[in-house]
Length: 475
Image (tube, rainbow, N blue to C red):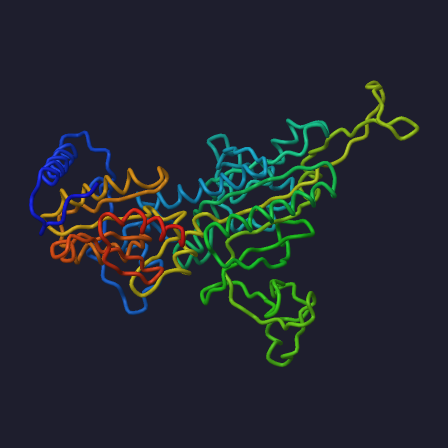
């Protein structure tokens, strides 16, 4: 229940509610408080003025989500880390739907493995190399195909142990020549990598399609308009790959997207170069034939590769196949020599830290950030004017107890003015903000704000749970 409106006559019920509110207030200052209070979270905001051409990355800095430590290297602060943790949990859910097991591979890899795979010569300038005290050559891993293939080669020997799906969410390192756009191109970054291992090409392609379905579900759960585009495999290898893009004016890729169907292709492998589009406006889509391909700047946030035996062959990842009798059926004769084959592999990445920057770029408006509900640091923030903390605590308690256990609610109890709190809430991008201010003092109603949906309305305390639930379902 909520306290009676301030202009109502006092009664036994209202006095009981006031005592309950006061008790809750004192509990929070006696160490028994379990509420999520902004005073308990280090969020260094203020002291930074928005520039005229402020991008989303600048808003991430001003909102206290991250700080730059060196060129292309960033520290995640508590609110930024909370966003990344939610993103990782969402990735866990979709990877586990594929039957994948999570691992944590070392951030250190050997130069020898990369020379064995043939990739060192092509990527050496982008690698952070170092030697141990004995002179052995190592690197900070920019990716883990060599390491995971070596691991599986040592451990998996039979077709009976496949399919195998391993994934990790870890930091990667690349010596970028020109880091730029904040989290979008850095020297240290967090990625999700899924590595798949199958007996033959047919099984590997089935896995590839399942991963694509999981990616569609993952990006859909964030409400993101991601475009899947056919792409080249580059230094990664293999003969099939797809990129996952946001269209964005700061994107470093150019994709050709059909204006009639879902077909898209990276301009690097398009049959017609993108810069020819002005001279051939009838560049027909090869898939639907009714539409034309239009060039769009795009920002890559994910990539899937069918690798085949690109790594299993040079690194010796082989499995024994079932023995067969002369009639073609499987044989129980274990003494017979068994045929072996190289494992068919795939690797599938999502740029976790890059996705945070991309989401910020996509949804930010001139006022501030706007996070999808699934990864917002908190889904509901309660702010209040001076002198209304006890009432705000009561609203907080009822919202927390009345909504799902998975709904995150935050109480902004910082000793600053209400206008400052409201500006900061807009900058931080919480999906729903509940305000106890002038409206509460005059009518006993809260003000409910949802910038993403364009809503600012006065709501009676008795209706607030239902209204918040309705809005959360739309986000």
